[in-house]
Image 1: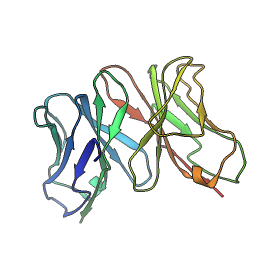
Image 2: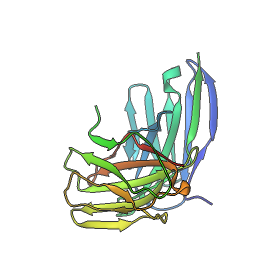
Image 3: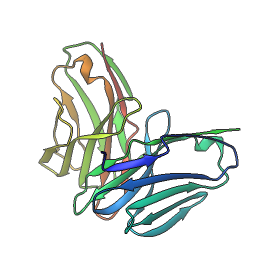
Image 4: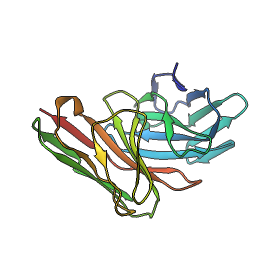
Length: 109
Length: 111
């Protein structure tokens, strides 16, 4: 079993829908990252969380440390949001990240 | 605009050739990483560095080597490329209590 599990693995939705991607982890962490990878391959860091909730534009990320769970929400989704979204955790005092397998999101016009 | 630069973006090379993938960052980050990612799969750490003259192997065994002679530069070298090395290689950097910055990646094909 992977230390970081994401669901769903694939998600297709219509433009404007509210999107939720989930991430569960099984180890103690110091921080959790949400990353976005477009088809070209480059990765953009969206959020780094250690508690609570963060919002940036239409993106919202939450984390529940006790339940070892995080969610990424996208409001008013748009085709340009189509990408792979990756959850990654930083264990303890380490700087190295452990990655989930990613969620492939497709938003249709 | 990118603060971490990887070159080349794409590379097709013959078996047995020596290659160096370049990674440079302008943010003064002390920590740098190389990740390998096969299509549709998760990223795996192959090398990391916590500062100049410090390099460590990552969680995934790799035949590549790295060096960190300057803070901003973290090149990865394959002495003799093989088809099994075909993959995407992503460089990243970080500093304590802040997020990661990733490069655009190098997509390597060994024929």
